[in-house]
Image (cartoon, rainbow, N blue to C red):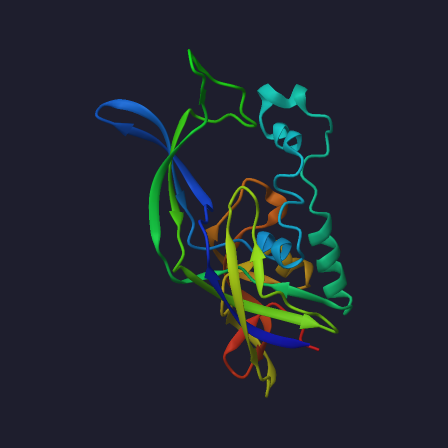
Amino acid sequence: MRLYKANFYLQGVLIFSAEIRPMISAGSAMGSYISPSSRIHNYPIMYGMLGKPAEAYFVFPSLHYLDYSERKRRAKTKKGLQYTSIRKLLEDFNKGKDSFYVFPLLPVKLTVSSFLLSSESWSYVLPVRNPTKNVFPRITSYSAFMPGSEFTTYVVTQGNVKLPEWIRIGKKRWGIFKVKYEEVKVNKVEKKKNEITSIPINYNDAKFFGFKINKFSRVLETPNVEEGMIGWAELEECQVINDRICLPINWK
């Protein structure tokens, strides 16, 4: 196994929403305001590193209909979103096969801009509005991360794995990153009890890898429970690397 400290340098617009609130201006409703999360879930990062930035997020729009009761009749399946590649990656990693695992991203530096988006279209004569994929307000104000933003995390690899230098984390998020890796030389691995993780972790993944969580402080939660909550955790037992790096990984 190899451990890397990875820095992600944003090269385009990144919309990664965590909170949607009604927007009111001059006493009138103006649609919604979407503010981004400074923590980025590890699943879109792993999809991007696999070269599949859209498998579960945008390829089949009808899958999203299942989240909205008034549009379920338009869905052609009852399975919903499927995280096939992520599940296989986690299983391969747990079995010691050639694979990698990425932890959620923490911000190092953020550059933020705001802009308006409208979901309606206009003809030459009359305004028209086609049905949108989901229930969506006509006008939405976004805050987005811009080039100059930087994030960091840890990446663990097993076997023969080539890590990508560029990734894109989903069509709906537009995020293009340049990634630089710095290998951490592992000099010592020691088991310790009741240690706090060195970086926010995925709750579901930690349990899948066989770690017991004593305490958990959530910093990000997505609508899909299968993705897992992101947060700081106190692990009942952890293999601490170089006396300072605590991650829910069984080091081999």
